[in-house]
Length: 275
Length: 361
Image 1: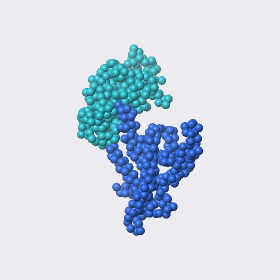
Image 2 (image 1 turned 135 degrees about the vertical axis):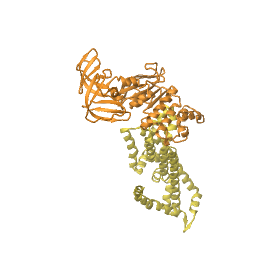
Image 3 (image 1 turned 30 degrees about the horizontal axis):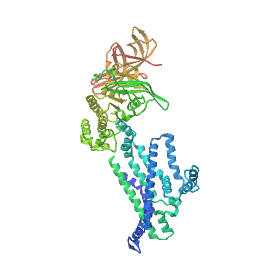
Image 4 (image 1 turned 135 degrees about the horizontal axis):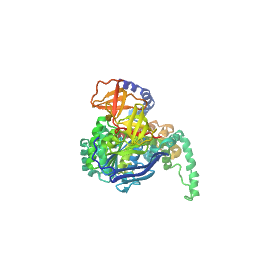
């Protein structure tokens, strides 16, 4: 017991760092959003929610984050299964393919996409020369482009937790299921999928949190035309000099993030308790 | 070793493994493997790790595909039938219970995989739980069970679907020694009562002797001998089988004289006589089961310094001084006292009990 208490001291530097650099500023921000002229008030929130433009932005932010998470999940799950079965050189190839893109900055990626997706870009040239379309299709500056781009950037955060869980799974379990008469589809839905759910929950929580608060990717891909909460926050602080509005939007983002973290850990605990 | 009440060897083959070959990454695991089991028979594949026994089991189950050859079950070739359509249940070494399901849900899995509605599985699950005396544990998560309880659940889960064949991969190896024997007795009578045909894979010769009607001793991808436990022990077909099954004295030697089926063999412990037809000069291994050696002169007699006397309770093991790989082991009943290390002892045994194997060159 004594020994464990000492080991707890090792977490002290990290906790102090988090408290001073992360928790304290956010707490001050939160307090600011509930204050007007030194009075406690929810007026800023009332103001925010009464503006239909803000509601459009809030809904768009949540929708983009949700669709990004879903797209990443659909692409990541089969990838994670393939990775969990890969051995030797193939596993290394997969892991490098996951980690390497993270070291390329989002700015670089975004400009690289624009070469492909812009009106006179590689993709449109190809579609037109194949006769699939007569006029170039607008792909950049759309919500779809944003979702595809965001899913690409955040994909490793979905693949790796699912891969980690599948890798730990006893390989005999699907075999035992097969010997008990379970078809490949039955095996997937009754053995592999339920056992991988903790990884799915963790991956979704990561990607949703990242996507709901992303700033650089939408700025580069959709620009000012379609705002998200993060962009609105930045605009409030930087251009409008409206600190109260900025603090309010930040706090809304913070509340969304905290709900996701708490909700996912509650789900993970529930799933964990069953096994 | 009493002969168990299984079907006779050579009876109509229920499971017929014909000419199976398998290689992994260019390394041959087995080639031309034949293996037949009669209906209702309990058979063990016994051998050291890497001998191919688990591969053979997996090929029968359909979890690994063979490169060549056929698996025939009850007259029907199932070589190309996928595992989930074979109705062959497997009990794995680690039991492979589904960790996200309760005991009852684990049992119901095979029924549900066959399309039975969840609500209808109750009576059969209850029966299967009663069969392995686990009725009180139905709603427990499997992680909360002891090793012996997990094994019972694994067996019940395998049997509930009424399989045509049961395969067990080292089913007792995760249990401690005392529990292992209890579980062996329990499982054996359970399978007998149901007339189940079963193949065990094991590296433990005592376990194989305990649960099987017949044992196939495997070595390097081949079956060295396929016989009843008593035949295997009394008349091992090779020096490998003699060493692997039971204890034995083992002397290396060379045939000096060979006439009319009688051999005189030169060993480091002196001359030994045996029956056999080997050419003079042939290098041989001579073996004797320890309980067939007495502390008195016999047809073969050796005088040797006592290296150790191990009192094991029901029996005492006397070890003669060894020379190289050779060893002399005499097993006497009860507690033998008054023996001292280094004292000269006389070991004697009969010509008929002397096993001789030519050393392969």
